[in-house]
Image (cartoon, rainbow, N blue to C red):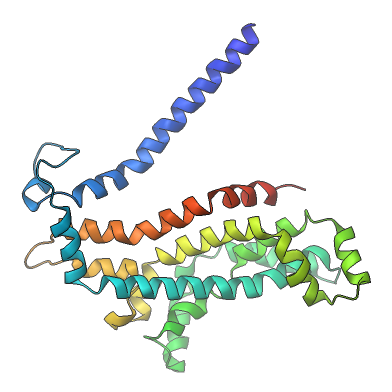
Length: 278
C-alpha cells in the first residue's frame, strides 16, 4: 500500500513539474499573442495585463501585411524548407540504408564520420560556403538558401538508427524477389520508416523555417527573405518599433509550425520512440 502511494505521489509530482516547465516554455508565446492584440498605448504600460482593455487585433494584423510582403516571406519559407527536406530525404535514406543493412569495408568509420559531422555547427562553415557561392555566382538566389543543407548528417543518423530495427529477413525477402538495392530503399524501407521520417521532417522544417543566420548573409533581395529575416524588417530605429504589428507578424509566422506539429504529433512521437529501439 505504501509503495503504491509512493508511486502515485511521484506521478503527481512529475506532472506538476511538467506543467510548470510547460508554462515556462509557453509563457513567451502567450505574451507574444497577447501583445499582438494590444494597442500601442497598452504595450508599454508598467503593469502586466494578460488581456487588453481594448482589442487592437484587426489593426495590428492588417498592418503586419501592409508593412511588409508577409505572404511572400511565408511562400519563400515554404519553398526553402520543403525543398531542403525533400533533398535531404533523397540523400539520407540511401545513405542510412547502406550504413544499416549493407556490409562493406570502412562502414563503421563512415558512420563515425557522420556522427562527427553532427557536432559541427553550420556557423563554422558559413564563411567558406559564402566564398564558394560568391565565386559560383549563386548568392542571392534560392539555391544559396537550399544547397548548403541538402545533406543532413542528423537525418542520416536518425534514419540509420530506425533501419537497424527493421528485420534483415524483410530485406532478404525483397532481394529474393529480385528487387534492387535502390528499389529496396524506396519500395520496402521507405514505407516502414514513415514515423521516423515524420520526426525528421519536423526537426528539419522547424530548423530551416526558423533559420535567421544563413539567410541573413546569403540573400539581399527582399523578394527572397525567409520569415525570420522578414520579421526583422518591422524594426524601425528612427521612428521606434511598432510592437503590435511586429508581434502579429511573428504570430502568423509560427502558426504553420504549430499546425504542422499538431497534425504530425502522433507520428512524431512514434518516430522518436521507435528510432531508439533495437
